[in-house]
Length: 95
Image 1 (spheres, rainbow, N blue to C red):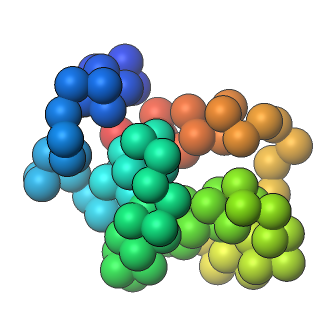
Image 2 (cartoon, rainbow, N blue to C red):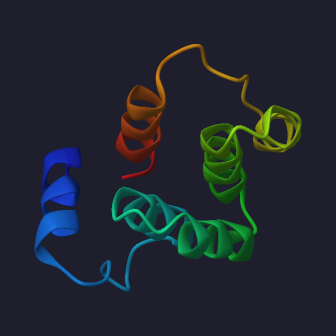
């Protein structure tokens, strides 16, 4: 699935495809505006990808300390790009 196709599913579906990785499903719910559902899924992922999304979500909520912890667990550095750009970067890599 391409990033463009993924974005279209956010507009056209009520839930993400079940065959998507939990970290990608978390991004989908974040794009739908459901931070809590996204947070729940990335915690369940138990992967570096889930940790990366987890970091992004805490950055989005303004919890920089918690975000830094999760970026470290994901093996990533906190980006200087906008949240929108980071979301796209994560989605493009994980898809």
